Image (cartoon, rainbow, N blue to C red; front, side):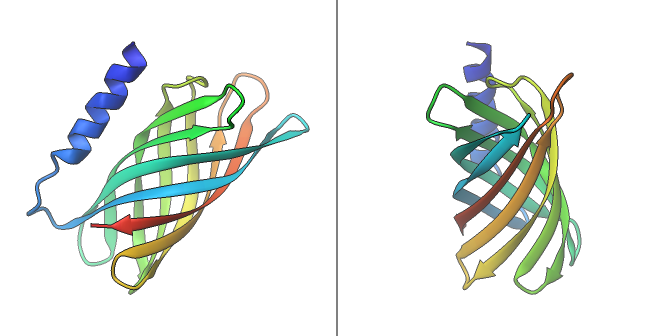
Amino acid sequence: MKKIILLGAAAAALASTPAMAAGEGRVEGRAGLAWAGGSEDFIAGVAAGYDFDLGETVFAGPEVAYDTNFDGFDGINLGGRFGFKAAEKTKVYLTAAYDVGDLDEFNAGVGIQQSFGEKVYGKVEYRRYFFDGTDLNAAVVGIGVKF
């Protein structure tokens, strides 16, 4: 129940972001591969976030994401990202979150987002989940819409 409340609170915070704020909201679908300890698994999910402009080239903002392997794993990440605009349509960023789903662990990563026109973007992202034992790695590609 605590996880559902946290996810709901994060979604409400994203939805209540003022329309006047400098920046952009986004929603995306993504899929990729997770690996740890010699085994691999397909993962897929969705994410939503808002990037606040912190000047002409720097941005930061919150993100909530849900990922699954369709075989019993459900990851719910609450976190954010911080980065810079490398070109007119390219963002490079660091990301960090806490998984309140099945993993209950901190994760961090890096990604690149490329706009295709005004509203659509694609991205590639790598994350590492830090466990006490074997760490989990995940690499995803995604496509999303900005608003």
